[in-house]
Image (cartoon, rainbow, N blue to C red; front, side):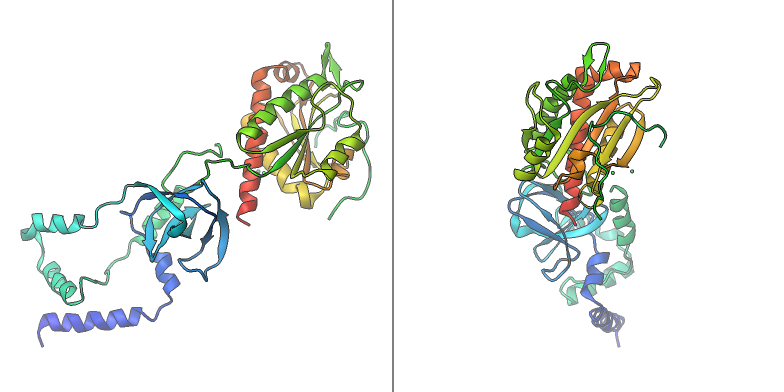
Length: 374
């Protein structure tokens, strides 16, 4: 029996043997380094663990999201999300960039250097012709390739300030989001807060000045910060409402009522703190209900500490009125101490208030981004 025929029979048996292994295993191993395309999502699309409608869904892409892909099987494209490979059906995607290598690149190289082929390669070529150009790979370096792609892929002094009314009642049961397109991730670039209603609560107001230091009134700084925050949120597609838009007194009960009786996805109360010891400084984030607000507090506080050059005083659970009586996810932010000279100087600047607004917005985007894939 000729050598070529022996190889043919041996290869055929190997192909039959491999075909009995689960198809999902092959998908997990397979990755094409010459497949590099950028798509934009046209309609809502699910991310799945394998290229099949029966595979588990691990998140949803919305219109305007973009993803770079590295493989394609039967109309499904492969990308990475949070470091993990995911599959999206390409029917709902529009190709906007194609950096993949031409399919005949290897063939052309072989034709240019036919004399350099080893005898074993020529024999394999003969087998390929017999099997319709389908060959069984001898080595699979996909694990290294996939790892390469995946490698590209959060109580010291108690403030005396906070709110006038602290209610001791039982309570229920942590860049940038507009990232540059990389080779291993889905990129969200369009209206990431679109459809969400955010209620901004500028602390104090009217006859309630809040903390006062050197003729600086807390009520004025919170209102100024609230307006800057609204601009950033609206740029990201959010609908923004205020508990107060000017120097008006609004009771704590009415602030909560606005949140509970109107469409509100998140309630954010802005404050600047004070303490008898002027050396105390930094920022705090407060929440009341762990179930509704714990993760929100974590993401916003993380963004604040990452973006502001301020001491991190941590995240704390407290029963403040506007938190404990709020039916929606709610946080109260103490953004510096008016009794600390360094904090007081910072908080009065446009630059600091802009940084606060940007950080809170980034924290909200991260919060909703994580919710969308649960």
